[in-house]
Length: 141
Image 1: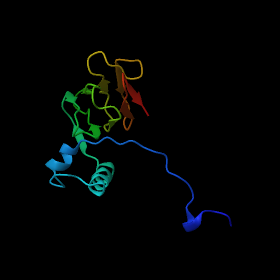
Image 2: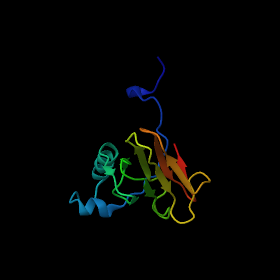
Image 3: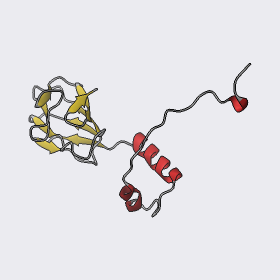
């Protein structure tokens, strides 16, 4: 009974979104992106993750990586995280997919740490880390 007209239930919290328009321009979506262009592109980026399978001994992550599947059948793999500057909130999902005895080692850039440690390791099949860039270090979720 008592609610506002039109079935309005509440307010959404205010959220500040910063976005790199160069990606929209490069993709040909718009030279002056509208709010709808931005929302559609962000929705696409959230639902279409780039998956890489890595078999070489080392891999340096960048903007194009989202999900990294590590196949350590033949060797150990070192996954190097990028520098934190300018990528706060960036998320990577790293998973070991083989059953062999080799390991995946995830390393911060330079002296940057992953929740207080320089490296983290994945040694069992299907073990994984979801890691997010913070202001001064990487966080595991």
